[in-house]
Amino acid sequence: MATYKGAPLATQPKTLDPAEYFNLSPEYRRAEEKRAALRAQLKRQYLQQLNNPHRKELIEDPALTRWTYARTNNNYFRPTAKTSLIGGLFGVLPLFVLYVVFKTDRDKREAKMKAGTYERPYKLST
Image (cartoon, rainbow, N blue to C red):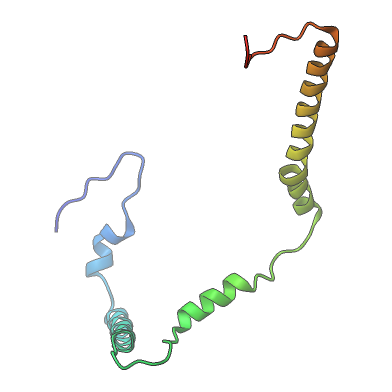
């Protein structure tokens, strides 16, 4: 096994710990082998369904179904004072600030035009 020289500010990764490889109990090794065999069996079953040329129906992937359900049924949002404040800061406040900036700039420009001191930056005709 190659020696690992760690970075000065980082800890040694757990996967490079020799105790992780050599000091494992037989029960732990058997459990890992059973999990690996189950993963390989499920992968083989899925690939057989995927590559079946006579397939007419969709492949039901339970993990994908759970992921989709979790993404679409997000029942964890609760309107609180904090979320309302954040929504106001990021949704309403920028619109209000832009309105004030554009309105004051336009008002100043119109006042200069009425006074006759406005110098147009881009002249279309000479």
